[in-house]
Image 1 (tube, rainbow, N blue to C red):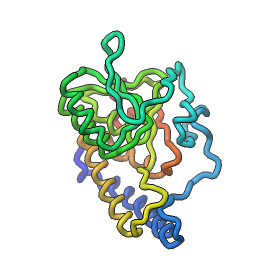
Image 2 (image 1 turned 60 degrees about the vertical axis):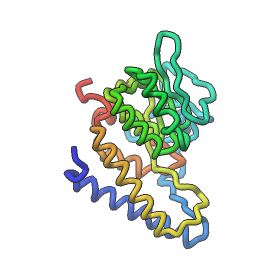
Image 3 (image 1 turned 90 degrees about the vertical axis):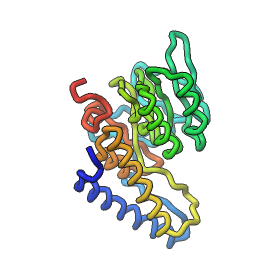
Length: 245
């Protein structure tokens, strides 16, 4: 689906961007930098069960694990992506997506050439996730999420890059607004321009990967310090998994 064939999506995103822009202007005028307001004062912790209509959780994966079973506790994840092959030949890519990881991990993926890559990450650099996602698609590498594991923030963009995607119904995939920093000194109009350019790039990427850009609606409605957990039916609806799966 081409980005330019979804005018309703673009109108909806534009409306959300205007709301974000207003918040940025108010924050700039108040001298507090960029800060987006919560839509709910009492958001449950990530460890609380998720139900339809109750999918937003406080985003603190270093403190809480998602309420999914069976849970594989990864312990502290690396502060940048690490590619490893474990017993049985399974390839895993785990850790925070740090700036520069695309340049570092891309050549490793080309050399290892795994058929499938198991992901687990709390997110991180959106730009690096998009580059690595395109690398995965170019190399024909599939992505997989196992029971009880998680993929949050920028990680779903990496997940979307899989030539084929296999996501357990008891894995946890979550999206939210991209984080632009609490103490930015950029003028509000410059920050809004950067947001719009970044969102356009993400929407084009999602369309190229066969993902419905409407997934940006719950993402852009969820502040950076919260996470919106996508239900299995939403993963099918947005195209992350086959609708017949």
